[in-house]
Image 1 (cartoon, rainbow, N blue to C red):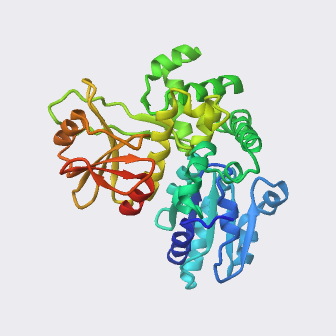
Image 2 (image 1 turned 30 degrees about the horizontal axis):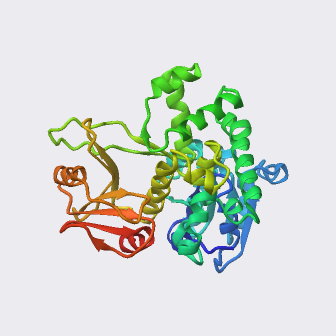
Image 3 (image 1 turned 135 degrees about the horizontal axis):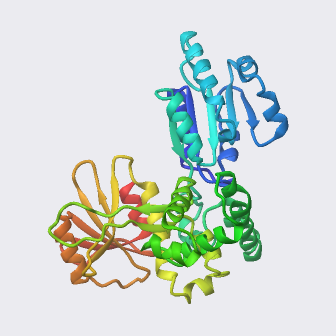
Length: 387
């Protein structure tokens, strides 16, 4: 088992809040992490996708009341949205009895229904955390494992697979389970073939500003339907929309978000790239590496920072703009080369952004200057400076 950085944060939240929701896409490792917690008191686990466990909650108030001194872990809790008012009542009752923290740990597959229900009925009683796929800084030997993580992605079963074929098959099964079973459960009235085509087309536009009307037309659906599909994929933590930098700068700015598949291994399978050799020889290689680095960086950022992209209609762009709470602005370019060049477009963009400094993130190496305000730095080295 690879230790997760979120473990310490999760334990701290459990000591502070009566309920904690640990969210993330399916198979990302939420259940494994929850069961491995050294919490200091006993825990009771229920999987709400298991009929026998679901049957125990026919009268949830009666059943859950018998575990007053334990941490109750409810897996796939979005399957039972009517449970949230009961949890609110139990939390308030235990608060009056002096038990203020560590009552319920809710695991959910990032369902919008889970977020909606809990925000309505558990406001002020619940804390949210997201468990991402494995990050490079969590690996025992990050430098040696980075390329494998990029190729296979960060889902534990895929990354830790015995061989390439097993990893590829796991990712194919993962995608199939989503388009045939899980997405239709979210009230999507579409065939698995259409959903797979939609996901594949998004993969081939990795890191681009998506024209949903054009995408919808090629699939024979309307723009609103395409938007709903995209919003759902984002709500399930499969896709990320990076918003544009929109501060009035007197320039014609692109005001559409850039869209990325968050896991590079899933991206490669959707794009039909079965091996690292295929990835390196494909036009998608640069965008795949950009999305991979973007996820590593955004996961390490403190919560009080904002992230966006910058692009003008004239073609000047910055892959990632980070604005810290202290007012510092970083302009980040991501390049898959060890000999990056400083371009006039980056300097011009930094001037418009009023960026304090610029960083060109490359695959490896310590930081070295390219100008007074711009440096090149390896991904691992950069992650250590922004955490």
